[in-house]
Each structure stands twice: as C-alpha cells, then as structure tokens.
Amino acid sequence: MKVDLYEKIWMWAALGIVVLFLASLGFSYIGRAIQPPSHVEMIDPEAVRTDEEFGNPGVTINADGSATVVVQAFMFAFLPQEIRVPRGVPVTFRLTSADVIHGFQIVGTNGNTMVVPGYVSQFTTSFSRAGEYLIVCNEYCGLGHHVMSAKLIVEEGAGSAGSVGESGGVR
Image (cartoon, rainbow, N blue to C red):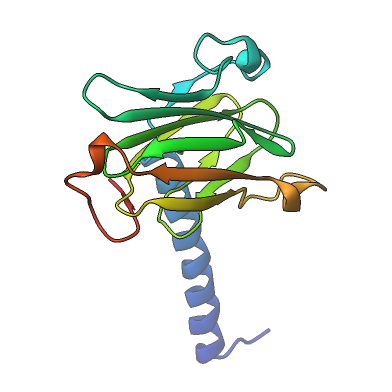
C-alpha cells in the first residue's frame, strides 16, 4: 500500500498533536499538582456540624475591626441564611460543605469560590457600599439547587472609613 507524502505529513502532524496534548496533561497533573481551591486546609466532612469552628456558623468581629464569616453549605442552603457585616473593613469568608460541591457567589461583587467537601475555602473582600447582596450557589448541587441562596447585609458601621472599590473586591 502506497501512502502519499502529504498524507504521511498529516498523519505525523496529527500524532504529534496528540502526543503534545498528552504530555501537557501529564505535566499539569504531575508537575503543577492538582490543587483544591483555597489554602488546602482540610476538614472531615462528616464532622462539619459538630466541628468547633463550623458547628456554630456566623460572623465574628475581630479585635482589629475586621470580620470573619464562617459558613456551612449543604443541600440546599447556606448556614447562616442572613449575614451582617460592617462596611469598609476586610471580611474573611471561611466555608465548607458536608455533602457535595457547592458554589458561593456574592452577586454584584467578585466574591466567588467553590465549596468542596473535606476542604475549607477562604477568601477576603471588603465592601465599600452598604446594602443587601444576594448569595447564590453557582455549582449545580442537585434538584433543589435553584433555591440555594442567602443574604449578605453590609451595614454602615465603625469600619466605614478607608473603603475599597465601588462594589467590593476580593483581595
């Protein structure tokens, strides 16, 4: 069987592309390691509700005026359902899930993370504008996904000075 020169060139080119693709996948998997979101803090998903930190989710105002918000995500709700934070101060969100992968998006800002069972996701942002923000799950988590939401209320407070950005931003 005789194969034309141009057919040989295209076959070798296609084979080269496949090899290059597989090599880049291997490099990404082994060389860069696949990392979960956040800073790789782990938690037992079965113990989330009894955990010292996540067993009582809510807002804590720290000594420096910043706020820490601890949130549980589970089918099909966030706990707490309503979060109140002061305006203009750094707010650190710490989240985990006890069941499946969820998303946590503060609509109108760039506050957004995946919430993966077994891991603690964390991000810090501040809000320069007081008001209500909708929090939604943006990762499909089951049949009730469309009703999974919470409310973030940014209040005028002592930390109002030194605001950042127009609608808040993740640092």
